[in-house]
Amino acid sequence: EVYYFRNEFLPKEDVRISPEDRGYYFGDGIYEVIRVYKGRMFEAKAHFERFKRTALAVRIPLPDMGELEAALQELIRQNAVEEGSVYVQMTRGTAPRAHNLNADTPPVVMAYCQKLSRPVDKMEKGIAAATVPDTRWQHCDLKTLNLLGNVLLKQKALDQGADDCILHRDGSVTECSSSNLFIVRDNRLVTHPADNLILPGITRNVVIRLAAELELPVEERALTVDELLGAQEVFLTSTVQEIVPIVTVDGKAIGGGTPGPVTQKLQQAFERLIL
Ligand code: PDD
Image 1: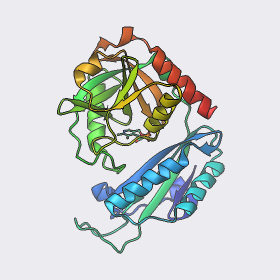
Image 2: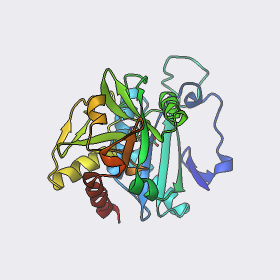
Image 3: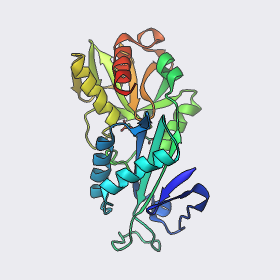
């Protein structure tokens, strides 16, 4: 397995991360997960734009993005990945532990890619979700390594026998542990606005685009937990999972407990983009 680390391609065993890496101490870094279909990165431009936006917001200097993109494509080639994902992260670099920003250390970029099939079974059958209060911080729009909140909330759902959590804050449904959430109501899609309380998902944007093509109205607005529970359909979106129906919420069946027609239409439209 070949990794990309500090501008070099090398075996995983040879990656040496310092105990003083700020990613390790503080989760002080950013990342992207990009899908690979037919050996190519899907929606690469959008992922690199979000990477740049997050880097700027957390004040980590950017590498040459053209070089980084070329390196990731080379990584895919060296690992012979046709269908899979690329993970790329950049930490603020290595410095003795201190809470201020250490402006003069170079960031550390690390990337790997893996083979990963599409979650066909979940896409066909749907999953169960549990509602959980969203206790994360106020910068959920930034794709940073600080994911302990997400990890604990996902585990809370798993402990209740569900597959994932649906998060809500001040009465509004935000997103899931590592995906965005949509409901179908009166044959319209409703999803939380892309503000500081959710990650602006690339797949979310693809779905909004597909909805326009299918002449399905989309409302980006706060939606309540009651609306969620009374929805015709519910589904999540992410790079890794694509479009997955949520067929029960807190044990209550959504739309008869099977994937609904609007979700399936969007899944088919998504498939046409990637196959
Ligand atoms: N997760 N919301 C959160 C909190 C996420 O972590 C993600 C992605 C998404 C969906 O974004 P996108 O469609 O751009 O993948 C929404 C990635 C896949 C992860 O952390 O593994």
